Amino acid sequence: MYRIQKFNQISVKGLERFERDRYEVATDIAQPDAILLRSHRLSPEEIPDSVLAVARAGAGVNNVPVDVLSERGIPVFNTPGANANAVKELVLCALLLSSRGIVPGIAYVDGLRGVRDAAALGATLEAEKKRFRGHELLGKTLGVVGLGAIGSRVTEAAIQLGMRVLGYDPALSVEAAWRVPNQVEKMENLQSLLAKSDFVSLHVPLLEATRNLINEDTLAYTRKGAVLLNFAREGIVDTAAVAQFLDSGYLRQYVTDFPEPNLVGHPGALLMPHIGASTAEAEENCAVMAADQLIDFLENGNVRNSVNFPTLVLERTAGCRLAVSNRNVPKVLGQVLSVLADRNINVLDMLNKSRGDLAYNLIDVECERRDGLRDAILAVDGVIGVRFVD
Image (cartoon, rainbow, N blue to C red; front, side):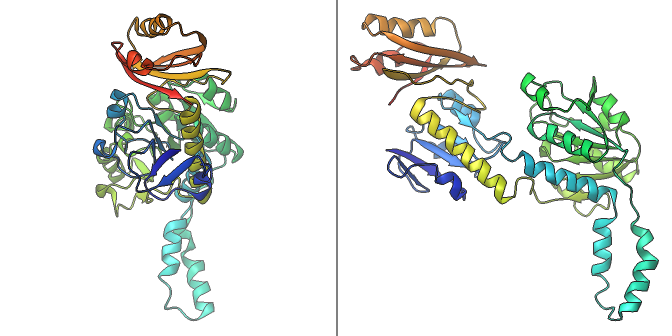
C-alpha cells in the first residue's frame, strides 16, 4: 500500500482518485511514499527519506524546496493549466473593473445608506453618475506578455470582446503556439508591446529572467494612461516603480492579485487577495491532476508535468520495471546497463531522457534476478535513486 501525506485541504474529488485498498492518505503519516500539498511551505526537514515524489495542486512551486529534492532524485509535480480558466475569468473581470467606475461607484452608493427617500436617492445618483464614467473595451488594444495556458486563453477571450490583441513570449513552445489564436499580433520584444497597448496583462512564470520584468526602464516604454494587470507572480513587477508611475499619472491603474504594502490604499491600485485560482472548479481540477500524476508515477514510474524531471512516459508491457534517476553526465546509463548485462538480465524495453542536471530512465527487464540489483545500480557513480516499480 502506498502512503500519501497531505498538507492543506485537498479537494475531495482529488482524494477520491486514490483507491482505498491501495492508498492511505492522511495528514499524519510516518514514512510517506509521496507528499501532496497546496500552499503549505514545505521545509526539507518535513521530507523523510521514504518520499519518492512531491506534488503541488497548483502551478507555482515557490513553496517547495525544488533544488533540495532534485539533489535527492525526487520529482516535483505541479498542475499547469488546471486553474487557467479561473485566472482567465479574473483577468476579464480586472479589465472591466479598470475600464469602468465600478469599484468607486459601488463604494459611493454604499455610502448613501442614510438616504431613505427613493426620489432623493434617484436624483442624487443621476447627478453624480458622471463621476464614474468609464471606457469600453471594444477597439482597445490588449498586450499579453506570456502566451502559455493562461495567456493564450486571455487572448482568445479578449478577441471575443472585440479587442485588438498583441502577444509577446520569447519562450513560446510549439505546443503553446498552437493554442494562440491567429488574430494575435506577435511582437518581437516587450518594449514594442508596451508602447502599443492600452492594457498590459502579465502571464509569465517567476524566473531569474523575469524577476522585476516590469521596472522603471520598461515602464518608460508604456503608453501614457495604460493599465497594467499582474495575475502571474508577485516578483515580476517592481511595485516601487509602479507606484512612481501611478503617482505621476503616466500609468492609469495597476490591477493585481498580489498586494504589497507600498500599494495598499493607493488610489491607482486595485488589489485582490490572491484569489486567481480560488474557485471550487479550479481547486478540484488541480487536485485531480496532481493525484493522477502521483498515481502514474508511483505505479508506473511515468513523469508528467514535473518542474525538475524530464517528461517521460513508457507504456507497460511485460517484465519488471526499474526507475533510475542520475546526474546528467556521460557513461552513467552505460554502466547501469552493464550491471544488468553482468547479471544476465535481459532488457525488454527502456526510455531515457534528461533535463538540466538530471536524467531519468525507465527500464523494463526480465524479473528472475532481483537480489542485490538495486544496491548494485546505486553503487554506479552518478546514480541518485533506484526503485522497482511494481
